[in-house]
Amino acid sequence: MDAVKTKAFRVPQGHEVDLDRWPTRVEPFYDSKKKYKKILEEHVERLRAAQHLLYAQESRAVLLIFQGMDAAGKDGAIAHVMSGVNPQGCEVSSFKQPTAEELRHDFLWRAVCRLPGRGRIGIFNRSYYEDVLIARVHPELLEAQHLGGGRVEDGSIWHERFHSIRELESHLGRNGTVIVKFFLHVSPEEQRQRLLERVDDPRKNWKLTRSDVEERALWPQYQRAYAEALTATSTSEAPWYVVPADDKPNARLIVSQVVADTLDSLDLHYPEVDGKQRRELKKVKALLS
Image 1 (cartoon, helix red, strand yellow):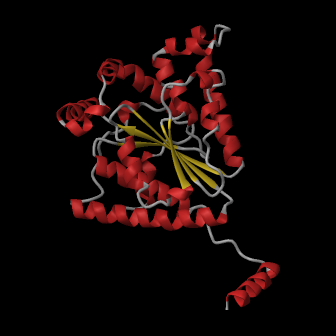
Image 2: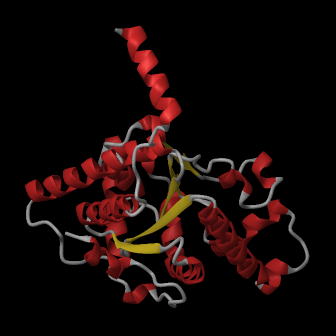
Image 3: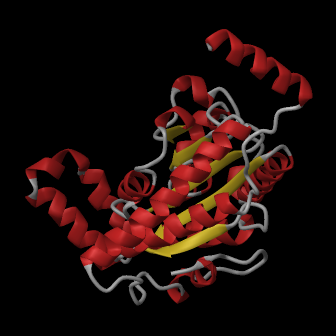
């Protein structure tokens, strides 16, 4: 598996996305469970080494965004792909229903507060994109934001928010944050099977609520919302990857390959010391001898 194969899942800037034309399952990049584990371990090792350099160099930050329908595999992808990363240089943030404090600010505020600093990897399990996805399918959620001005009624709010997202991501890119976004693309039937597993497996009962099942009736609306968001916000500096997610191991290999390639592209290296620092190190060595 190499970088060329992952390019097929990247949404080109300006490309109009029709999710019906994007597969939820592709030919696997592994031919056995043993092979899957071997490839994933190789990717994780690359990530571990690159993250160490990122942390030491402290000049760039990486933000990974995961979106998808319920049971698309976001939690599992994050857990498996980032299993070898030092927790000291990585932080996962999950975004659920906004709090009263968050609703008093613009829709990007709560995410901006959790952006990774230089030298760190930030992972958003859902993100500010919820405000152009679930809020679009359920516009009544916007009432608590007291927006006014008729922007919700005429639909202009969505174009405004897409513009704000592009501007934020462009700003972050100019200031050293590399952004990669993953939409885990699962089929309705595969989601149904996974939700049933949550019913049948006592260890997964806590993951399932009635609303998860009720949201399935809104599948077409969510697909349209996702398609428009991907179309409007996939850019060369902050691309979206539509990852076929019906096969969980394959999805994890695609995600780990993209993340590893992204980190490798940053030309990371250990900081070089100047003459003054080198002389200081000699003094420190003498004290320790």
